[in-house]
Image 1: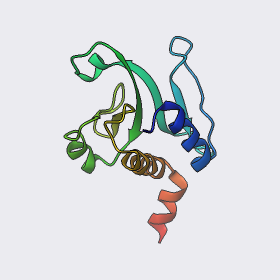
Image 2 (image 1 turned 180 degrees about the vertical axis):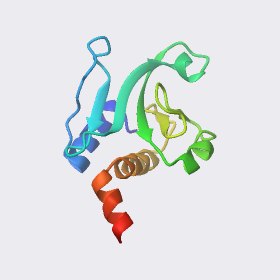
Image 3 (image 1 turned 90 degrees about the vertical axis):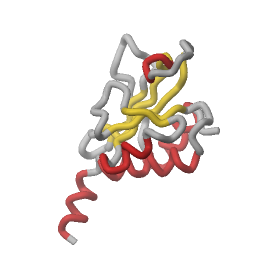
Length: 128
């Protein structure tokens, strides 16, 4: 299962990015940015499940990821994937890190988020 610690390690290895902790009142919220353009591509948080519309009032680790708006609607129908918590719900999704979403799917969504927020790559693709 890809939990918070394993996801932190994966991001460090795959993208050579260390987490930032910008909020004093939310010390468990880790933000990952591109080195060049400083755009966020992932935010790992611990939130109450009720914030996602779930009936349980326990805390769960989640990751917010940027997503293609064409995919967000269909992804919201899948177990463990929700509209972006505290983000633009057309462009961001929140994924539970409790084993309800397959590790490979989380990594694929993370890669997608990274690519969508990488302006250098997007500009290069537009020129080709």
